[in-house]
Length: 412
Image (cartoon, rainbow, N blue to C red):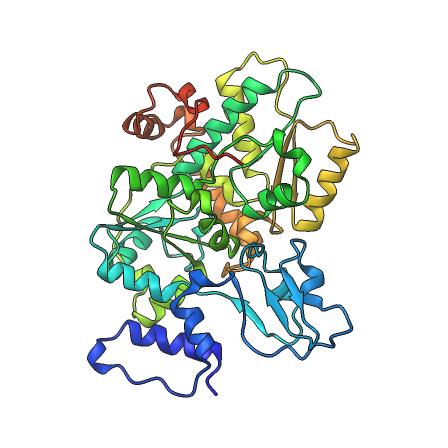
């Protein structure tokens, strides 16, 4: 029988051909086909075969899930709860039988590119540098997406700039004593999911901000109401985030870097050979979000620019990987830290260490740092594109970001 991976690649190849040349599919699991055609009906992690796990023993996949999204019946078969699964990838890594895999959004996303009545935008995560080879510049990647039928490519780093500014303003407003502290809210869905579901008592210290992915999708839909938005990054958890009910209005589809690589392969597009189409709008602060410590550094420097005479400065602490994040939270709860700004990233190394990256996380970190160093502006305060965009969205001043905004604010 055709495996899930074989069916995926066959359908992708067929979707990029003329329909006249397509062949009828045979000998496949109907559930596999449904998962590929309707990924929104399933969890970000999908089961692709019978488990045959001992029913009276703990399963490695369920034991690795800190969100209790996996249950096992009397026969040893597991079920993944779509509402509880965050796409953390731990179960996939720990499934010794390799019966779990990441969901794929390619087929409905490509169909949207072909049939959408409005423009379709690729929203590229800050970790993209070097993922499609060292020769692929942001400008060449933008041209490659246009060749696929996208109206354009938007760097999500610009919206990381805006969220940096918002969190810096929140810190300046709310951290007034040595005992006050803030947990970053705007980057990693794993980190936020952990706080919301396991450490609920800490939620008052999380400012109500959406992620840069959601901010970019919402902004595009305000400026172009008929647009389709497709986020592209290294993270499976972003698929779950995009489907959360209170923010599901922002991003229509989420593709991983590996999914996009597959599209380029079957479409016979080599981004390295594309023409340049440069439109760099983000500051260093937004670009370094993709690696551990990037959010902390961005907020720290932006607070200093906002209020250089501030007596209580930003004292940061970071953790990457779920075990390290939990340890950092435990130290906070036990009063064993003097930090007042805490950054958590679900993957070791940050987004550059995500499960769907295509290069080593150390190389990814170096690429991100180099791209950040090449930015014209150091912080969002210095970036005129941030101010211009905020004005277009109806914000008279940067301080008005503290007011409730349906675009950048979220009620947890």
